[in-house]
Amino acid sequence: MKRILVTGGAGFIGSHLCERLLGQGHEVLCVDNFFTGSRANCEPMLGNPRFELMRHDVTFPLYVEVDEIYNLACPASPVHYQRDPVQTTKTSVMGAINVLGLAKRLKVRVLQASTSEVYGDPDVHPQPESYCGSVNIAGPRACYDEGKRCAETLFHDYRRQHGMQVRVARIFNTYGPNMHPQDGRVVSNFIIQALKGEPITIYGDGSQTRSFCYVDDLVEGLMRLMAVDAHPGDVVNLGNPVETTVLALAQRVVELCNSPSTITCLPLPQDDPRRRCPDIARARAALHWSPRVDLDTGLARTIAYFDALLARSRGSVLP
Ligand code: NAD
Ligand code: UDP
Ligand code: UDP
Image 1 (spheres, rainbow, N blue to C red):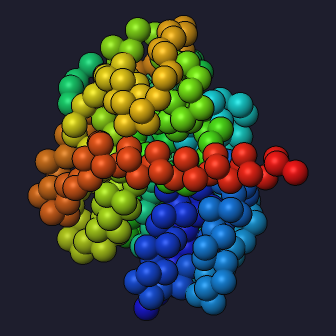
Image 2 (image 1 turned 30 degrees about the horizontal axis):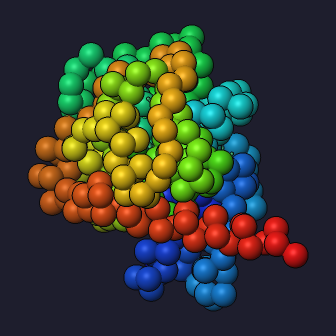
Protein backbone atom coordinates (compact mmCIF):
# COMPACT_ATOMS: atom_id res chain seq x y z
CA MET A 1 0.00 0.00 0.00
CA LYS A 2 1.17 3.52 -0.82
CA ARG A 3 1.01 6.95 0.77
CA ILE A 4 -0.51 9.14 -1.94
CA LEU A 5 -0.67 12.93 -2.17
CA VAL A 6 -3.75 14.44 -3.83
CA THR A 7 -3.53 18.22 -4.25
CA GLY A 8 -6.97 19.77 -4.70
CA GLY A 9 -8.33 16.72 -2.89
CA ALA A 10 -11.15 18.68 -1.22
CA GLY A 11 -12.59 19.64 -4.62
CA PHE A 12 -15.09 17.87 -6.81
CA ILE A 13 -12.90 15.34 -8.66
CA GLY A 14 -10.25 15.24 -5.92
CA SER A 15 -12.70 14.12 -3.23
CA HIS A 16 -13.85 11.19 -5.40
CA LEU A 17 -10.24 10.26 -6.14
CA CYS A 18 -9.33 10.32 -2.42
CA GLU A 19 -12.28 8.04 -1.62
CA ARG A 20 -11.30 5.55 -4.33
CA LEU A 21 -7.67 5.48 -3.19
CA LEU A 22 -8.70 4.94 0.45
CA GLY A 23 -11.03 2.19 -0.77
CA GLN A 24 -8.02 0.43 -2.26
CA GLY A 25 -6.28 0.52 1.12
CA HIS A 26 -3.85 3.38 0.46
CA GLU A 27 -2.99 6.24 2.80
CA VAL A 28 -4.10 9.58 1.37
CA LEU A 29 -2.67 13.00 2.11
CA CYS A 30 -5.15 15.60 0.81
CA VAL A 31 -3.71 19.09 0.36
CA ASP A 32 -6.07 21.97 -0.39
CA ASN A 33 -6.44 25.70 0.28
CA PHE A 34 -10.27 25.48 0.12
CA PHE A 35 -10.52 28.12 -2.63
CA THR A 36 -13.32 26.16 -4.34
CA GLY A 37 -13.17 22.92 -2.37
CA SER A 38 -14.59 22.27 1.07
CA ARG A 39 -14.10 20.24 4.22
CA ALA A 40 -17.65 18.98 3.62
CA ASN A 41 -16.43 17.05 0.56
CA CYS A 42 -13.93 15.29 2.86
CA GLU A 43 -16.39 14.73 5.70
CA PRO A 44 -16.98 11.01 5.00
CA MET A 45 -13.20 10.42 5.05
CA LEU A 46 -12.23 12.46 8.12
CA GLY A 47 -12.72 9.54 10.52
CA ASN A 48 -10.50 7.26 8.47
CA PRO A 49 -7.05 6.93 10.12
CA ARG A 50 -5.49 6.53 6.64
CA PHE A 51 -6.79 9.98 5.58
CA GLU A 52 -5.03 13.26 6.38
CA LEU A 53 -6.26 16.72 5.39
CA MET A 54 -3.75 19.57 5.18
CA ARG A 55 -4.63 23.20 4.46
CA HIS A 56 -1.92 24.46 2.12
CA ASP A 57 -1.58 26.56 -1.03
CA VAL A 58 0.40 24.75 -3.74
CA THR A 59 1.99 27.99 -4.92
CA PHE A 60 4.22 27.56 -1.84
CA PRO A 61 6.77 24.74 -1.44
CA LEU A 62 5.59 21.55 0.19
CA TYR A 63 7.87 19.17 2.06
CA VAL A 64 6.13 15.85 2.73
CA GLU A 65 7.00 12.19 2.21
CA VAL A 66 4.77 10.29 -0.24
CA ASP A 67 5.02 7.51 -2.85
CA GLU A 68 2.85 9.04 -5.59
CA ILE A 69 1.33 12.44 -6.45
CA TYR A 70 -1.88 13.51 -8.20
CA ASN A 71 -1.82 17.27 -8.88
CA LEU A 72 -5.41 18.48 -9.14
CA ALA A 73 -5.19 21.81 -7.30
CA CYS A 74 -6.71 24.53 -9.50
CA PRO A 75 -10.19 26.05 -9.75
CA ALA A 76 -11.93 24.51 -12.78
CA SER A 77 -15.10 26.55 -13.29
CA PRO A 78 -14.76 29.66 -15.49
CA VAL A 79 -16.62 31.74 -12.87
CA HIS A 80 -14.05 30.85 -10.22
CA TYR A 81 -10.83 30.75 -12.24
CA GLN A 82 -11.66 34.19 -13.68
CA ARG A 83 -12.31 35.69 -10.22
CA ASP A 84 -8.57 35.99 -9.49
CA PRO A 85 -6.91 35.21 -12.83
CA VAL A 86 -3.36 35.97 -11.62
CA GLN A 87 -3.76 33.48 -8.78
CA THR A 88 -5.13 30.93 -11.29
CA THR A 89 -1.99 31.11 -13.44
CA LYS A 90 0.20 31.02 -10.33
CA THR A 91 -1.62 27.95 -9.05
CA SER A 92 -1.06 26.06 -12.30
CA VAL A 93 2.52 27.15 -12.94
CA MET A 94 4.00 27.49 -9.46
CA GLY A 95 1.92 24.54 -8.27
CA ALA A 96 3.39 22.41 -11.07
CA ILE A 97 6.95 23.51 -10.23
CA ASN A 98 6.46 22.67 -6.56
CA VAL A 99 4.91 19.23 -7.10
CA LEU A 100 7.54 18.43 -9.73
CA GLY A 101 10.31 19.53 -7.35
CA LEU A 102 8.74 17.37 -4.65
CA ALA A 103 8.40 14.37 -7.00
CA LYS A 104 12.00 14.85 -8.18
CA ARG A 105 13.36 14.83 -4.62
CA LEU A 106 11.29 11.78 -3.69
CA LYS A 107 11.83 10.01 -7.07
CA VAL A 108 8.10 9.29 -7.36
CA ARG A 109 5.54 9.32 -10.14
CA VAL A 110 3.42 12.47 -10.57
CA LEU A 111 0.20 12.98 -12.55
CA GLN A 112 -1.01 16.36 -13.76
CA ALA A 113 -4.73 17.11 -14.14
CA SER A 114 -4.62 19.02 -17.41
CA THR A 115 -7.66 19.98 -19.42
CA SER A 116 -9.39 20.00 -22.79
CA GLU A 117 -9.05 23.79 -22.49
CA VAL A 118 -5.48 23.44 -23.77
CA TYR A 119 -7.23 23.02 -27.16
CA GLY A 120 -8.99 26.41 -26.72
CA ASP A 121 -11.81 26.95 -29.22
CA PRO A 122 -10.75 24.02 -31.41
CA ASP A 123 -10.78 23.96 -35.20
CA VAL A 124 -10.07 20.21 -35.27
CA HIS A 125 -12.92 17.95 -34.25
CA PRO A 126 -12.92 15.68 -32.27
CA GLN A 127 -9.67 16.66 -30.58
CA PRO A 128 -6.78 14.15 -30.59
CA GLU A 129 -3.77 14.64 -28.30
CA SER A 130 -1.67 15.65 -31.32
CA TYR A 131 -3.78 18.78 -31.93
CA CYS A 132 -1.86 21.83 -30.71
CA GLY A 133 -4.93 23.92 -29.94
CA SER A 134 -6.25 27.39 -30.59
CA VAL A 135 -6.13 29.48 -27.42
CA ASN A 136 -6.69 33.24 -27.30
CA ILE A 137 -3.65 34.28 -25.26
CA ALA A 138 -5.23 37.61 -24.24
CA GLY A 139 -8.76 36.44 -23.48
CA PRO A 140 -10.46 35.94 -20.11
CA ARG A 141 -9.98 32.14 -20.24
CA ALA A 142 -6.24 32.38 -20.89
CA CYS A 143 -5.28 32.41 -17.19
CA TYR A 144 -6.60 28.86 -16.99
CA ASP A 145 -5.75 27.61 -20.49
CA GLU A 146 -2.23 29.02 -20.68
CA GLY A 147 -1.52 28.16 -17.04
CA LYS A 148 -2.41 24.54 -17.79
CA ARG A 149 -0.40 24.59 -21.03
CA CYS A 150 2.67 25.89 -19.20
CA ALA A 151 2.18 23.23 -16.50
CA GLU A 152 2.20 20.56 -19.24
CA THR A 153 5.42 22.03 -20.63
CA LEU A 154 7.01 21.79 -17.18
CA PHE A 155 5.94 18.16 -16.87
CA HIS A 156 7.57 17.31 -20.24
CA ASP A 157 10.73 19.22 -19.38
CA TYR A 158 11.11 17.62 -15.95
CA ARG A 159 10.68 14.23 -17.65
CA ARG A 160 13.31 14.98 -20.32
CA GLN A 161 15.71 16.89 -18.09
CA HIS A 162 15.48 14.80 -14.91
CA GLY A 163 14.30 11.43 -16.24
CA MET A 164 11.13 11.61 -14.16
CA GLN A 165 8.00 9.48 -14.40
CA VAL A 166 5.22 11.90 -15.29
CA ARG A 167 1.64 11.47 -16.48
CA VAL A 168 -0.59 14.12 -18.05
CA ALA A 169 -4.38 13.64 -18.27
CA ARG A 170 -6.31 16.07 -20.45
CA ILE A 171 -9.66 15.99 -18.70
CA PHE A 172 -12.85 16.90 -20.61
CA ASN A 173 -16.05 18.21 -18.96
CA THR A 174 -16.75 16.04 -15.92
CA TYR A 175 -19.78 16.14 -13.65
CA GLY A 176 -21.30 14.33 -10.68
CA PRO A 177 -21.97 14.53 -6.93
CA ASN A 178 -19.73 16.85 -4.83
CA MET A 179 -19.78 19.64 -7.42
CA HIS A 180 -20.20 22.81 -5.41
CA PRO A 181 -23.76 24.18 -5.69
CA GLN A 182 -22.34 27.61 -6.61
CA ASP A 183 -19.72 26.07 -8.86
CA GLY A 184 -21.17 27.86 -11.89
CA ARG A 185 -20.58 25.06 -14.39
CA VAL A 186 -23.36 24.02 -16.68
CA VAL A 187 -24.48 20.69 -15.21
CA SER A 188 -24.73 21.91 -11.60
CA ASN A 189 -26.36 25.20 -12.68
CA PHE A 190 -29.02 23.46 -14.78
CA ILE A 191 -29.82 20.82 -12.16
CA ILE A 192 -30.19 23.33 -9.32
CA GLN A 193 -32.31 25.63 -11.50
CA ALA A 194 -34.53 22.72 -12.56
CA LEU A 195 -34.93 21.45 -8.99
CA LYS A 196 -35.92 24.94 -7.80
CA GLY A 197 -38.25 25.50 -10.77
CA GLU A 198 -36.22 28.54 -11.81
CA PRO A 199 -35.45 29.46 -15.46
CA ILE A 200 -32.63 27.43 -17.03
CA THR A 201 -29.90 29.88 -18.07
CA ILE A 202 -28.52 28.99 -21.49
CA TYR A 203 -25.57 31.15 -22.57
CA GLY A 204 -25.91 31.95 -26.28
CA ASP A 205 -28.39 29.90 -28.32
CA GLY A 206 -27.38 26.56 -26.79
CA SER A 207 -25.97 25.16 -30.03
CA GLN A 208 -22.44 24.90 -28.58
CA THR A 209 -21.46 21.36 -27.66
CA ARG A 210 -19.70 19.63 -24.78
CA SER A 211 -19.06 15.96 -24.00
CA PHE A 212 -19.90 15.08 -20.41
CA CYS A 213 -18.06 12.38 -18.46
CA TYR A 214 -19.38 11.00 -15.19
CA VAL A 215 -16.88 11.45 -12.35
CA ASP A 216 -16.52 7.72 -11.50
CA ASP A 217 -15.41 7.00 -15.07
CA LEU A 218 -12.95 9.87 -14.99
CA VAL A 219 -11.40 8.78 -11.69
CA GLU A 220 -10.99 5.25 -13.05
CA GLY A 221 -9.14 6.74 -16.04
CA LEU A 222 -6.83 8.82 -13.82
CA MET A 223 -5.91 5.79 -11.71
CA ARG A 224 -5.25 3.64 -14.77
CA LEU A 225 -3.06 6.34 -16.27
CA MET A 226 -1.06 6.57 -13.05
CA ALA A 227 -0.69 2.77 -12.85
CA VAL A 228 0.24 2.01 -16.45
CA ASP A 229 3.92 1.12 -16.67
CA ALA A 230 4.78 1.55 -20.30
CA HIS A 231 4.45 5.27 -20.97
CA PRO A 232 1.41 5.54 -23.26
CA GLY A 233 2.58 8.77 -24.83
CA ASP A 234 3.12 12.23 -23.54
CA VAL A 235 -0.50 12.91 -22.70
CA VAL A 236 -3.86 11.15 -22.68
CA ASN A 237 -7.35 12.58 -23.26
CA LEU A 238 -9.89 11.42 -20.67
CA GLY A 239 -13.52 12.21 -21.38
CA ASN A 240 -16.76 10.87 -22.73
CA PRO A 241 -16.91 11.02 -26.55
CA VAL A 242 -20.71 11.40 -26.65
CA GLU A 243 -21.24 15.00 -27.76
CA THR A 244 -24.32 16.99 -26.67
CA THR A 245 -25.54 20.53 -27.33
CA VAL A 246 -26.07 22.71 -24.29
CA LEU A 247 -29.73 23.09 -25.33
CA ALA A 248 -30.21 19.30 -25.44
CA LEU A 249 -28.59 19.03 -22.00
CA ALA A 250 -31.01 21.66 -20.62
CA GLN A 251 -34.01 19.80 -22.04
CA ARG A 252 -32.81 16.47 -20.65
CA VAL A 253 -32.22 17.91 -17.17
CA VAL A 254 -35.71 19.47 -17.15
CA GLU A 255 -37.25 16.12 -18.16
CA LEU A 256 -35.28 14.07 -15.63
CA CYS A 257 -36.16 16.51 -12.82
CA ASN A 258 -39.79 16.57 -13.95
CA SER A 259 -39.43 20.33 -13.61
CA PRO A 260 -41.71 23.22 -14.64
CA SER A 261 -38.62 25.36 -15.48
CA THR A 262 -38.58 27.34 -18.70
CA ILE A 263 -35.45 28.07 -20.74
CA THR A 264 -33.99 31.56 -20.95
CA CYS A 265 -31.06 32.68 -23.13
CA LEU A 266 -28.30 34.94 -21.76
CA PRO A 267 -25.25 36.36 -23.61
CA LEU A 268 -22.52 33.90 -24.58
CA PRO A 269 -19.29 34.57 -22.62
CA GLN A 270 -16.24 35.69 -24.63
CA ASP A 271 -14.12 32.87 -26.15
CA ASP A 272 -16.65 30.18 -25.16
CA PRO A 273 -15.56 27.13 -27.22
CA ARG A 274 -18.10 26.23 -29.96
CA ARG A 275 -17.51 22.49 -29.92
CA ARG A 276 -15.65 20.07 -27.71
CA CYS A 277 -15.34 16.31 -27.99
CA PRO A 278 -12.42 14.05 -27.05
CA ASP A 279 -10.76 11.57 -29.36
CA ILE A 280 -10.10 8.79 -26.81
CA ALA A 281 -8.35 6.28 -29.11
CA ARG A 282 -5.14 6.58 -27.08
CA ALA A 283 -6.89 5.98 -23.74
CA ARG A 284 -8.70 2.97 -25.21
CA ALA A 285 -5.48 1.46 -26.54
CA ALA A 286 -3.05 2.30 -23.73
CA LEU A 287 -5.33 2.11 -20.70
CA HIS A 288 -8.12 -0.16 -22.00
CA TRP A 289 -10.37 2.58 -20.73
CA SER A 290 -13.60 4.06 -21.98
CA PRO A 291 -16.53 5.63 -20.08
CA ARG A 292 -19.27 3.27 -18.88
CA VAL A 293 -21.86 5.61 -17.35
CA ASP A 294 -24.23 7.14 -19.90
CA LEU A 295 -25.53 10.70 -19.56
CA ASP A 296 -29.01 9.80 -18.26
CA THR A 297 -27.61 7.52 -15.55
CA GLY A 298 -24.98 10.05 -14.49
CA LEU A 299 -27.47 12.93 -14.49
CA ALA A 300 -29.93 10.90 -12.39
CA ARG A 301 -27.23 10.26 -9.75
CA THR A 302 -26.20 13.92 -9.77
CA ILE A 303 -29.81 15.11 -9.52
CA ALA A 304 -30.34 12.81 -6.50
CA TYR A 305 -27.25 14.35 -4.86
CA PHE A 306 -28.39 17.96 -5.37
CA ASP A 307 -31.96 17.10 -4.40
CA ALA A 308 -30.73 15.80 -1.03
CA LEU A 309 -28.44 18.81 -0.60
CA LEU A 310 -31.28 21.27 -1.28
CA ALA A 311 -33.60 19.38 1.09
CA ARG A 312 -30.94 19.63 3.84
CA SER A 313 -30.41 23.36 3.25
CA ARG A 314 -34.20 23.97 3.31
CA GLY A 315 -34.35 22.04 6.58
CA SER A 316 -31.59 24.13 8.13
CA VAL A 317 -33.47 27.42 7.68
CA LEU A 318 -36.63 26.09 9.36
CA PRO A 319 -37.03 26.94 13.06
P1 NAD B 1 -12.71 22.06 -8.10
O1 NAD B 1 -12.68 23.54 -8.20
O2 NAD B 1 -13.91 21.41 -7.49
O3 NAD B 1 -11.43 21.51 -7.31
C1 NAD B 1 -10.18 22.14 -7.33
C2 NAD B 1 -9.59 22.07 -5.93
O4 NAD B 1 -8.31 22.70 -5.92
C3 NAD B 1 -10.44 22.78 -4.88
O5 NAD B 1 -10.61 21.96 -3.76
C4 NAD B 1 -9.64 24.03 -4.55
O6 NAD B 1 -9.88 24.51 -3.23
C5 NAD B 1 -8.23 23.52 -4.77
N1 NAD B 1 -7.27 24.61 -5.04
C6 NAD B 1 -7.38 25.63 -5.91
N2 NAD B 1 -6.29 26.40 -5.88
C7 NAD B 1 -5.44 25.83 -4.96
C8 NAD B 1 -4.14 26.18 -4.48
N3 NAD B 1 -3.48 27.25 -4.91
N4 NAD B 1 -3.58 25.37 -3.54
C9 NAD B 1 -4.24 24.28 -3.06
N5 NAD B 1 -5.47 23.92 -3.49
C10 NAD B 1 -6.06 24.69 -4.43
O7 NAD B 1 -12.46 21.51 -9.57
P2 NAD B 1 -12.50 20.02 -10.15
O8 NAD B 1 -13.57 19.97 -11.16
O9 NAD B 1 -12.49 19.03 -9.07
O10 NAD B 1 -11.12 19.99 -10.93
C11 NAD B 1 -9.98 19.29 -10.42
C12 NAD B 1 -8.84 19.37 -11.42
O11 NAD B 1 -9.26 18.78 -12.67
C13 NAD B 1 -8.42 20.80 -11.74
O12 NAD B 1 -7.01 20.85 -11.88
C14 NAD B 1 -9.08 21.09 -13.07
O13 NAD B 1 -8.37 22.03 -13.81
C15 NAD B 1 -9.08 19.71 -13.72
N6 NAD B 1 -10.16 19.57 -14.72
C16 NAD B 1 -11.47 19.44 -14.32
C17 NAD B 1 -12.46 19.34 -15.30
C18 NAD B 1 -13.92 19.17 -14.94
O14 NAD B 1 -14.76 19.14 -15.84
N7 NAD B 1 -14.28 18.99 -13.70
C19 NAD B 1 -12.12 19.40 -16.66
C20 NAD B 1 -10.79 19.58 -17.00
C21 NAD B 1 -9.82 19.65 -16.02
N1 UDP C 1 10.05 21.73 -3.75
C1 UDP C 1 9.09 21.40 -2.85
N2 UDP C 1 9.24 20.26 -2.11
C2 UDP C 1 10.33 19.45 -2.24
C3 UDP C 1 11.30 19.80 -3.18
C4 UDP C 1 11.15 20.95 -3.93
O1 UDP C 1 8.08 22.11 -2.70
O2 UDP C 1 10.40 18.44 -1.54
C5 UDP C 1 9.86 22.94 -4.55
C6 UDP C 1 10.86 24.03 -4.24
O3 UDP C 1 10.13 25.21 -3.96
C7 UDP C 1 11.60 24.21 -5.53
C8 UDP C 1 10.68 23.62 -6.58
O4 UDP C 1 9.99 22.60 -5.91
O5 UDP C 1 11.83 25.56 -5.82
C9 UDP C 1 11.39 23.06 -7.78
O6 UDP C 1 12.36 22.12 -7.32
P1 UDP C 1 13.63 21.78 -8.19
O7 UDP C 1 14.46 20.80 -7.39
O8 UDP C 1 13.24 21.36 -9.53
O9 UDP C 1 14.35 23.16 -8.39
P2 UDP C 1 15.20 24.11 -7.45
O10 UDP C 1 15.11 23.59 -6.04
O11 UDP C 1 16.55 24.03 -8.00
O12 UDP C 1 14.55 25.44 -7.61
N1 UDP D 1 -23.33 27.36 -19.84
C1 UDP D 1 -24.67 27.70 -19.96
N2 UDP D 1 -25.35 28.02 -18.84
C2 UDP D 1 -24.80 27.99 -17.59
C3 UDP D 1 -23.45 27.62 -17.47
C4 UDP D 1 -22.74 27.32 -18.62
O1 UDP D 1 -25.22 27.71 -21.07
O2 UDP D 1 -25.53 28.29 -16.61
C5 UDP D 1 -22.59 26.98 -21.07
C6 UDP D 1 -21.25 27.67 -21.24
O3 UDP D 1 -21.40 28.90 -21.91
C7 UDP D 1 -20.50 26.65 -22.07
C8 UDP D 1 -21.05 25.30 -21.58
O4 UDP D 1 -22.30 25.60 -20.97
O5 UDP D 1 -20.82 26.79 -23.44
C9 UDP D 1 -20.13 24.62 -20.58
O6 UDP D 1 -19.81 25.55 -19.58
P1 UDP D 1 -19.00 25.18 -18.27
O7 UDP D 1 -18.77 26.46 -17.52
O8 UDP D 1 -19.67 24.07 -17.56
O9 UDP D 1 -17.62 24.58 -18.79
P2 UDP D 1 -16.59 24.97 -19.97
O10 UDP D 1 -16.62 23.80 -20.86
O11 UDP D 1 -17.07 26.20 -20.67
O12 UDP D 1 -15.30 25.18 -19.27
